[in-house]
Image (cartoon, rainbow, N blue to C red):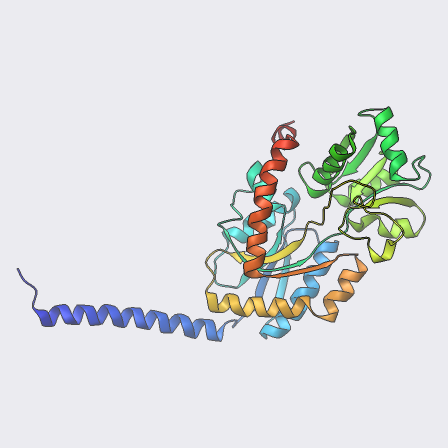
Length: 329
């Protein structure tokens, strides 16, 4: 039976009307967003360096958006519990969070059941971290050269503490060991704070961590042998980088802000603008200066490209360091 043209026309117009109405409704939602507080998932414990920097960002970004941003700490599994919660959240812009760059590694190792290339919407890269190698003040190792010489003389006997297998401190230290031609004995802890106590207590020879060592270096309890950044850190400008000492290893593990995949482009534009202003704020600079974190801002699209590049590098590194085998042991 042939449908009358007038009926067909009504069906077409009805469909077009519904599409237009849905589009208009979406635009109105994006224009009025946010109408309530936003939840920010921080995948690290409260009070740590990442938590401090994220709270400073959220304070400023919330001011720009006209709504408060409440930080919710979901720590565990080297930041991957929080990352998974973020990837699984509703993509309405009301749940955002910190995305550690280690998602590129742990997704391939199976710790994170999400794909950073497909399951996140990227808002901004914010700042990096200052990593370093520190030893107790009474250690026989006065320089990194002496540390390397001892490791060469005693393969596998010089120990170092780190914050967990597969994390930035473990992987960075093993990259350095490979570049130096030495074999170290890694001692994993549940986090940087415990690793620090292991070294301060004399149980481990050296510490590989972000700037948890800084106040103890200033207090004379630890000696900083080298940092891992592209440039020397301003607070410890007399301490060489690994590159200064001839090792082509740079680890800064920059953090960023993201959301679940599928956020409305108009809402995403508001979030990108808010966090761009937050990263440039004096409040954020005060925190990054305090924790020796270099500002490394990238807008969302460039941050996404960076994540994809790091993902490819991590694929090579995982095989080179045999991380899959280490994770199982």
